[in-house]
Amino acid sequence: MAAALRASLLTAALLALTTPLSAQTAINLTGLRQDTSLPVEVAADSLAVDQTDGQATFSGNVKVTQGDMTIQAGEARVEYTPDGKGIDRILLSGRVLFASPTDAAEADEAVYTIDTGVVVLTGDVLLTQGSTTISGGRLVYDLDQGTGSMEGRVQTVFTPGKAQP
Image (cartoon, rainbow, N blue to C red; front, side):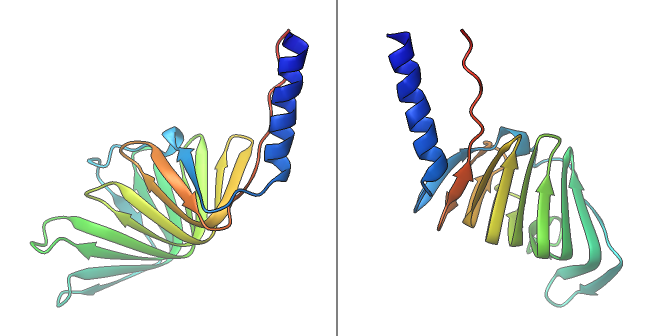
């Protein structure tokens, strides 16, 4: 009986390896979970500030850090809250990389809404969790909850663990 169960699980795993996923896939992102109340630090080659529309644009080798999470991009446009006392969103472009000690996500562009902790990555998205990778057109994830979903033409490669006797 155990051999039959193992064979069924192996068949299902192999099917998952060879079949592209479509539409939407739910993802557990505990490695990219973040305390969004922590300060956001930004470093870049240059900074342009526009007081009229409440934006600051960091360009060149942009690195944004919040707790254990690091974001790298070619450019980051910071939009402040209407009262000017906090950051509303960060719009990132130029091959964006989100990284934590255990997970990483990269895409062409990303929008990070600070208050909600939601990040939307678009364009050639690649999520890496240990030895597992998932790619798709759009990744929406909630840093507070550690949950997300990949949309578009979703593909993944699983590395099955060896069954213990």
